Length: 282
Image (cartoon, rainbow, N blue to C red):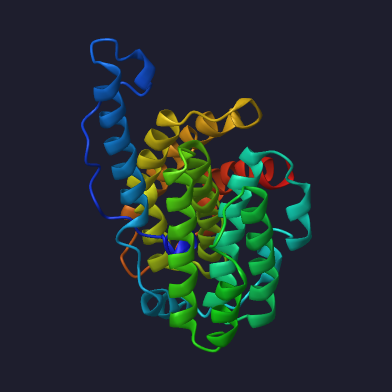
């Protein structure tokens, strides 16, 4: 799904579409084929906005190095929990979560941990009927490149693009949207924790840039509304708009060289923890 969304700490493409009905079924003045075309294009653009302008591994590595960050596996979702996700909705959401965790472990060159999260991703793909993506061949490629961080992240990135494409081509846009949402939420959660622990202005600035990608994600979820067991997701995503905006205003008032007070993250941190817990502990 990208370079998966911990790596998607920055999204710079503008939102490409002007406002229209968030529910395609209410556009009675268009014929069904026109509505479908508009919705398909709009959804593709929203997903593309979330995926594009991802910082390359070198930029992420430099940010981590500058902030003197160390790997903390306790931040990640427990790899033993993948068997507990029984519905397709929660499998898709946590495929996104584990995908982000896989990129996180790879970014910190944690080979053994990466293989654990690769297993989670592989099993959830199988559970969703996604074939030929995180299969034995991909596992072999990852193993062969385990000492090359850039290549490893590239393989993971392309594999998630394939998973996302598989879902779309098989008319499973709803699962694709949840995959993206799970990865985005885990990415913000991890970035939030890293920013709090490091007081890094660079990481904080990248989080603030996610205001626009959050709006794109909300629009994507409006086009593919969550099912009954994940209906909390859309409203919960909307609750993140205010704390991100507040963080932006408060950080803008700081001296450019000042460390970021962890207290500024309190509201965002509390809200993202609640959302993530609903997803990972269902």
